[in-house]
Every structure is written in C-alpha cells, then in structure tokens.
Image (cartoon, rainbow, N blue to C red):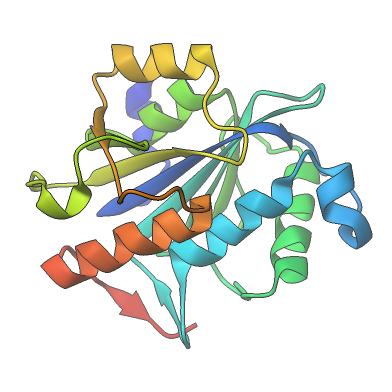
Length: 216
C-alpha cells in the first residue's frame, strides 16, 4: 500500500503524537491483570493515549496518537487512535488496555483497516506511522534541544515523535534524521513521556492551535 492509500484511509488531524514502544508487544497476547510484566510495558503507551486524547469530560477531536509497537513476533506494527472518530475512550488504564488488546487481536480485512471505531492497525514501524499521517511538520522531543516554548511552529498539521521509557534506538534516530525531524526540548529536567505529551498539548492550546474538542 502506497503513501496516498495510507492517508486516504485516515482521518485528518491537526496534531499527532507518535510514541515508539521499544519492547511494546505488537499483539494482544498480554494479561490485563499484569500489564507491565506481560506486554513489554504497553502500560507506558496507554498513559500516553490518555494524555494525548482525553480531557476532563471530553476528547480531543483534532488529535491522533500512533503507537509504534516493536516487541514480539508480530512486530513491527502500528496502532492508531483518532480522536475524531474513536468511541468509548475511558481514562483508566485497564479500559484502555482492553481496547488495545482487543484491537491488536483482530486480524484486519485489509492492511490498515479500522478494527474498532477510530482504531486502526497496520503492519510496519515508524516509517509507516509517519507516512500514515500524510504531509505534516515532524518534531522529535529530546532533552537538550531548543525549547518548544521559544520556537516558532509552522502552520498546518504537526506531528511529535517520542520514545517510551527506553528512549530511541539507533535505527529510530537514523530514520528521524533522514526525515529531517526538528528537535525540540521541554525544559531542563527529564519528564515522563505522557507528561511530555501533556506539556506539548498545553502549549499548543495556549497558542490556539486547532484546539477542537467534544464530549465523549
């Protein structure tokens, strides 16, 4: 499937977060009762989903999050959740884990097919995830990079790439360099990935960047 087909099958977004799970299981073969130990730390990515899409009594309808899953025999796979069309998103980790588990367990009828409302799964890693978003300005969040708060952002769709608790591997860094992703930092101290997403979202909200929301 080419890039045009990837984009045609996806909802348009104003902002997106792409989180690379270094060991996150690319199948639904993990236990809801012991997510951290059985899933390659998908729990880290679930907290990112909550931070990216969920507000108090609302959902960010202009936002998508893509989870790049690099662990297990089914890897690499990318799971995408679009705020514009997703239903029944709940803030608790167990509910989000159940959604992801069921979505990864469904064999889509075609590559990248929607498996649940607003949730799609596609074979492939970070390169596929970025192509899936279509034309957008790509940023990677890293310590020591120029501050987001002091940086001008271009008009149009924005994509922010983050690592999980393991950070980026060499292959991921090489791909981001090849994509000419702009590096941005969030401050002098290291924060958790889900907190980084919250900080970015708040900064974009303050700037009035496509802050479209709806109650769920």
